[in-house]
Length: 425
Image: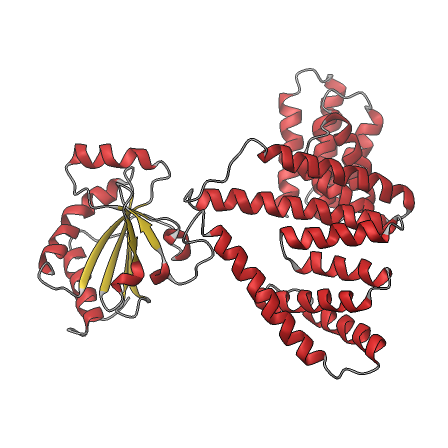
């Protein structure tokens, strides 16, 4: 429904800014939008009727883009192809529309659609490559560098997979197999493993197909992402029994696939940690934080201590009010070796922090949150998170109460130390 309303807003924006529209067309478009109501299907029909009545509308491009977005939302492949091709005729490098149209063509099947999909998929691969051709993925680049690397690899793998599927539908089994296996190599996924299995089996290479089906089954289980694991297992059983006449030995094959895919995914995580040591980590105590001057702090070195994490930002006015109170609590525990206080800045622009600290005369002993904010789901600033001696979240305080903050934080730190019986909130 949200996507549908986005399309409605696009169309309304076209109407409101369309000073070139005749009065008759403005009235017709307003009527079409009103008739669309809250139904995506009615919206499509109303805009289609409008474009038939005004084929040369100055706002045809905006309205066709709105139709494409709504067709994507409805999984309406025929309309997605019809209007998507029109959008691509004007915007051949529109990555999102190109991928969706290619996928829809493959869903529809047939040689003509497959050939057009293959052409689109090749262009998609060129666009993904061109997007990053002047970029270098720098080790130590942080979470943003990991995101870019992930986007690049996913995009390459997706373009290769679509090429594989198109080649397979065209009867080019060897090309389909090669491209599907390459897609899996670039970015191991359930879908690429299934695709490789599909075309290997079509080419009569059932033993290799079985291995990829086992990979698909185990990756789905490792990710626990709601993949169709039961379907993969059924296909695996059927193909294995066809080849061997029995299911004896299948369990060992699955266990081997589990070990293989676990190693592949671990290798990918290790690769991403070249760019960000915290990539894909789920345990806060395993994080490495970067300091204001580039120094590194491994939180695991603080195991056995109570760690107080103060999430703040230079733009946060309440953080300034909380700061002197926070310093009072720090002073209470200055002689307690088992308590560590860490100020974690959450600014996107790190260059703002040092001048701010100098100007306001705060301590320069500050670290950047380096992805810990997202992991701990810190959605507002200031927030204080206390890790217990085992490295796990003991309690948190969202915002602060000026009159009670010092006492509340003191009680919670003491509770984490086991020295008091303060109630966790």
